[in-house]
Amino acid sequence: MRCITTVALSLSLFLVGLVGPIQAQLQMNFYANTCPSAEKTVQDFVSNHISNAPSLAAALLRMHFHDCFVRGCDGSVLINLTSGNAEKDAAPNLTVRGFGFIEAIKAVLEAQCPGIVSCADIIALASRDAIVFTGGPNWSVPTGRRDGRISNASEALANIPPPTSNFTNLQTLFANQGLDLKDLVLLSGAHTIGVSHCSSFTNRLYNFTGRGDQDPALDSEYAANLKSRKCPSLNDNTTIVEMDPGSRKTFDLSYYQLLLKRRGLFQSDSALTTNPTTLSNINQILKGSVEGFFSEFAKSMEKMSRINVKTGSAGVVRKQCSVANS
Image (cartoon, rainbow, N blue to C red):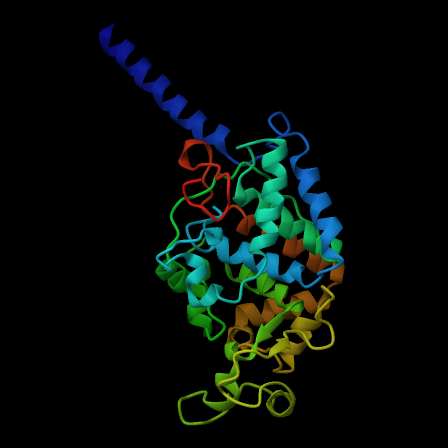
């Protein structure tokens, strides 16, 4: 009898252990009881401000991406450290914008529901809302993420795919996050909006192999235009360039069309055409409609937004997004 009781007890504890994480997973309308207006507050704030700064849509989406690729989607990209060794201090994040925007939303929510809504959820919601308000795709954002308290520049440098990535590096870094090649192609489609600094790609124009040469994979006419009109030298760190020329404010298929013309701005863009699987994915997207692309992009965004999320007691709710121990 004692053995049976012990087995039963062990089984019940095992089941409790299973139920815990399941209940702690992300869910739609997570704040319905604790802060019912949370998602509407984020949406209204974005709606009221994005028309004055539409470029923030691409910036917030990039922030969300960079946050999720380091320690999961836990808001750690927002943290300031006096040591200068936070994620935002790493090279990939030096041009990330929107930190003040997220902090402003957080302040409104703290006034409404103190200590309830995480910074990680605010990034996820605000980036989606900003894209929708600028005419881009919509996707579901389940909530319940908790915030992390660790932010390390070296981890950002190691995990965020740089614009100089070749295909192998991209495949590895995405696979490390549980994302496949289809996700790689779809999420790269976010480059259909926004801008980049010359410093992210001038090596392709002036010093691709360290011999003062140009990347042969880059269309020569496009390269000549970038040199003469946009980035006149290898050391230009201030000029910004459209990632999808002529269409940077519109979430559409133009980015993929440019890839096939060898006019992807980054080496990482060009790399998508060097693998038969990703090249096939690009062609499939172009054979379909914009609505079809939106639908598939949404699925990959939902998948990305769940990367290594902290829920329940695994994380905290920071009262100030930039302060680790707030």
